Image (cartoon, rainbow over all chains, first blue to last red; front, side):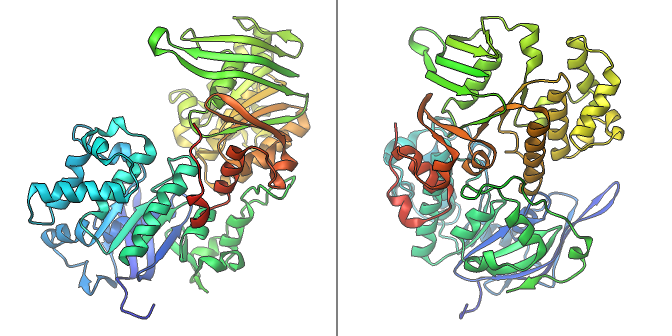
Length: 285
Length: 261
C-alpha cells in the first residue's frame, strides 16, 4: 500500500445491549483497505459480518458502533449524518449479501432494479440508465442481457442472481465493495465463475474489496490479504500467500481441522480453544 | 450389504415429468462408507430418500434394491426401518422444536418396541459425547454441533446397521465439522456400521469414504476409489472440473470451465 488507503478502521467496537447484558460482537478491530482484495475469515459468531455492516452503518437496532477512527477516503464515517451515509452507500461503498433470493425485490424486474440503483446516484435519462444496465449485465457475463433485463428474480438461477447483484452493486461505480459470503449458497463451479466476474471488475476498475467468508481455502486462493477473526477480535493478519505459514494457534487449528482431498487421515485434529486468545493482541505477519 | 440396480425416480405426470434419478446402481459392502457427490439438483439426496423409502407417493421409484438380503418393496418393513437410519443436513429442521432431547431420543425406541429405553437414551448420548444433563433440554437450547450429535444419537438408538448421512456437516463450522466427522468415524469402527454419505464437499467424501460416485443430472458420471481422487486422476471431464473447482480459486482454470448439460 503506497497511496492513502480507501478505508481506515481503528479500534472498532460493536456492542449490543441485551436483556442478559452487554454483548461484544466486535472488540477492537483495526485494519486498512487499499485497492486490493482483503479477506475476513472466521467461524460463526466471530464478528466478521458485524465488522462489514458497521462500516456501512447497517448495525441492527440496539447495536452500538464505537471506534477511534473509521474513515472512507478521509471522510469520517462515525460522525456522518444519515444523508451523507446514503450518498456513501452504493456510490462509495456497496455491499453484496449471501442470498440473492432475499436481497432482490421479487416483484420488480431485474432491469428495473439495476436501473434504480444507478438512477438513485446519477441524474440521467431513463434511456441512458437502460443502456448502462444492459452493458453491466453483459459485463457480468450474462449471455442474453435483453432477456434477463425483463425477467423477475424467481426466473433466474442462483448463480445468475448473484451476477445480477454484482451488476447492481457495480453500476454506481463504488470504490469499495463489501461482499458477505457472496457465493456460499452456490455450487462450487458456479461459485468460482461468479468470483471471476467480481475479480476482473475489481481489478479493471481499481476498487477495494472486503470479502467475508468462513471458507479458509477460498479466501486464501482468492484474496491478497487476510484477517482471521475469532470472538470479535483479529487473531492474525497475513498475506494470502503466507496463510499456510500462519503462526497463531487459532489459524493453525482451523487449517488443520479441514479434511483434505489428498491426504488420508484416521482422525482430524480438533481445535482446542484457548481463552487467552481473547486477551492477547493479534499477530501481524 | 446394499445393492441398488437400475433405479429410476420420476416425479410428476404428463408434461410435467421430472426424471430425478436415471438408471442408478451401487454396491456397498458391510462396514464400508460409500460417498455420493454432486452439485445441487444432481439427484444425490433423492437416491438416499428412495433407498430409505421416504419419497412419498409423488415419486415413482423403479428398479431393484436389496439391503441385507431383504428385497425392498413398496412398503418398508419395521425391521428395515430399525436397521436403516438417516441423519439430515439441518439439525434445526429435523429435531422437533417442542420436544426435549429425551423425547426425541426415546420416540424411535418406543416405535420399535425396544426395552430399557432410559438406559438406551443415556447410552446413545454418551456415545455421541453428550452427558445425561442434555436429556431435558430443547433443541434451541443447544449449539448446532450438539444438535447434530443429538440427530446422530437418535439414529443410534435403534441399534442400526446402516446410516444414511445427507450432508451431515454442511451447516456446521469447520472446527465443529471436524469433531462430528471424527465421531462418525469412531461410531463406524465401534459398531461396524455401513454408511452412505451424500455431500457436495469432495474433501469430506475423500476423508470419510472408500468409494464414491459422482452424480450429475440424476445419473452417475463416474464411480471411483478414493485413491483415484487423492491422485487427482478421475477419468471423466466433469469429475476433473469438479475436482479442480474444489481446490480453490484459480483465475486461469475458470476460463477453461465447460458447461455440462
